[in-house]
Image (tube, rainbow, N blue to C red):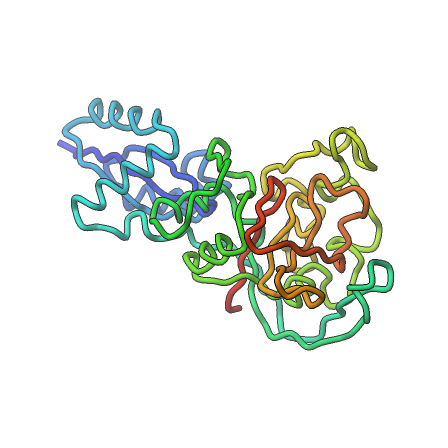
Length: 309
């Protein structure tokens, strides 16, 4: 008689998927080859984090349904409890494999004469090769760090939609997550090169401002993109035509992003880049700079991580 297993995999975006199979290894391989469930096809690669052996298909189906009925926080708590009992701490302590794009070494044009004084002077610097997250860190990915007790739960945090960018995080919170994920916050120069490419373009997608390429320009129903964009953060990667030359998404709009650097005019603050959903006084220009106190949190302030190429 075949043995049935209930299994849980963690997807690349940090979300969890539960299924049953008589051959878990083969099923995980199918998920990673794009032949698994519809849910995992757009969220691969996946990583196996838990299995349970059941006596029959019917008991496996009941257990699968019970786990699926749990909210995400309940699933993470279940995995954490199992890890504690069996000493398998790595079941929940591992972050999802980061999806990063590589930015090659070379010159980068920084600054602009079209913005505020703090963007001047325009200069060219050489930036070493690095990689940067394709999208902003999601709520789902951050929840794994909280479950592993490596990150603090952010005020007003919600896990209802794991594909939304993680917001309401301080600079220290962002640093802690990036360390958990095997990376760090990008420097300002890295962030700007990832957004502007080797040609120093005005926006990540080119030189023409466009409401259809980024989530920006709507604050409380007012602004140049009111009626076109929602005026709130949306799931990461929702504007694929706004990708930078290196394939990074949402570098213009959606949420502001922490960087590693201190603000030169006030070293007590940290630089944020990219604009947000609710920015409408200025467009999501890639050279635009802003800065907040490191403990600042906001509903349209998030981050992404960088690392080795």
